[in-house]
Amino acid sequence: MEVVSPHRSRGAAVIAAPLDTTLPEAIERLRALLAADPHDVETLGRLGDAQLADHDPDGALVTATRAIELDPERAQPHRQASIACSRRGRHREAVAYAEEATRLAPDDERGFVVLARALLRAKRDLERARHAAIRAIVAAPEAAEPHLVFGMVSAAEGEHAAAEAAFRRVLQLAPETVAARNQLARLQLRRVVEAGAGKPVGGGAVTIDTVNDAPRTGPARRPLDDVRRALHTRLRLRSSLA
Image 1 (cartoon, helix red, strand yellow):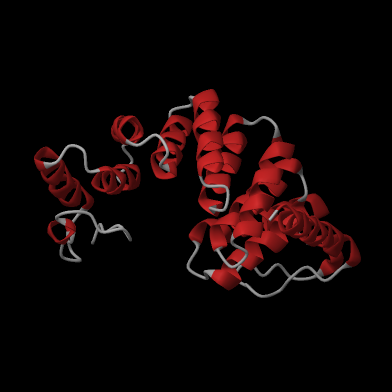
Image 2 (spheres, rainbow, N blue to C red):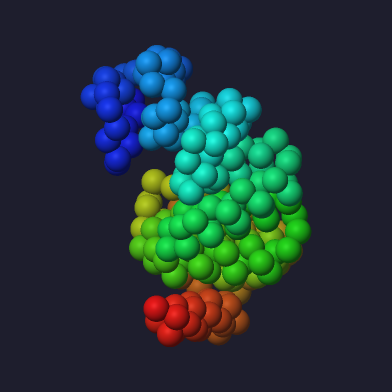
């Protein structure tokens, strides 16, 4: 694998590793670079991302905290700290870090995605989580992750038609997204169970592997229309504030 930031720092060529490099090997390379320059915040950012990918939230939180101390106006370590805290069940801290990330980079959808996920993991204030997910979609309508988190929030709220439409949109944008397929399968299985006798709602066949079949019935379309109206409203507000 290759651990490379879009922003090259000193010695970035040293970080670039062969494609077969494992995460632990990449992390060791990053640590070696930081031993030579402990104040390289970009390398700290790459290390934090690698530690999160390697399922090490404690290490990622230490790394993110160091980066925040060096450059408190940088949004990336706040996002990383939020993810790390959320994985450790430290939900108040996770939300606070995510809020700071959105303050520092209000046009970056990644902060709003992290905020929505933090609120969702905390199992509280789903309305605010939905608002954050919509902000993420407005900021990056062609990115898959905002639609994924919107679908997850919608599912948690019981808005299953809107959730299904969101997951299908994710699969249109990024067909390889396993999380969206799994979420869509759960929703469709729920429809089968709720319909009873193994028959899906409406008497149609369940097609878990179908990506492009958007809900076609009136009741299923209405939540998605509400989302579109909300997005248009956000876009108008954004234009008026520009």
